[in-house]
Image (cartoon, rainbow, N blue to C red; front, top):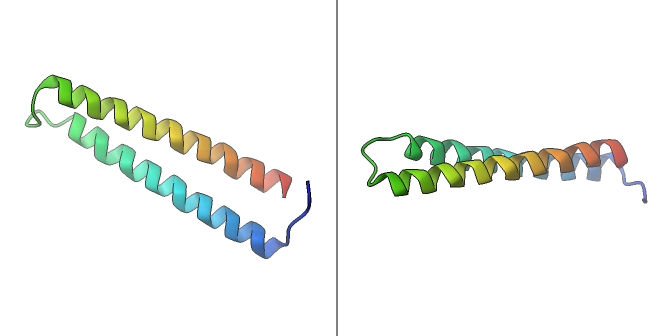
Length: 73
């Protein structure tokens, strides 16, 4: 793999950290909705809990990418 400059590596890492932050923010929002007993039927809360789990998986994937970029570039 071609080496990149420190500046572009920092830019890439910053973008992925931002992406991870978005995923975690969405996870937190969906988990909050899922835990709110005032939100519609259980089916809706279950759907939001599933969305929260999906967002956590996305954040985990982005973290893996961050690790790869950190170690490979």
